[in-house]
Amino acid sequence: MSYSLLPMLEANSLIREVHKAKYRPTDRVVALKRILMHNEKEGMPVTALREIKILKALKHPNVVELLDMFVVRGASFIIHPLARH
Image: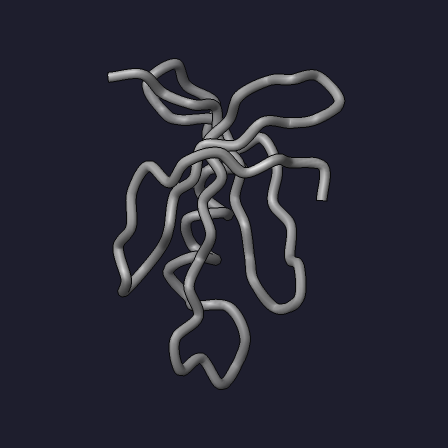
């Protein structure tokens, strides 16, 4: 994995965990969202697949960009730019 984990930003035990992470090759700080797969018998949750499909299709200044997506040892991760609020 080309990302170094930094402190957790948000934990929602039902759906996801969001960590701050640094992309090692460029030192860019990003949001790394881990999709939790509780009791999933048939792969990734439908809601996560839907989110990925929609984010890949949308390109708009008011919609967070999907930078990357990958699976490591059965855990799915979605990478977004780190949004400051």
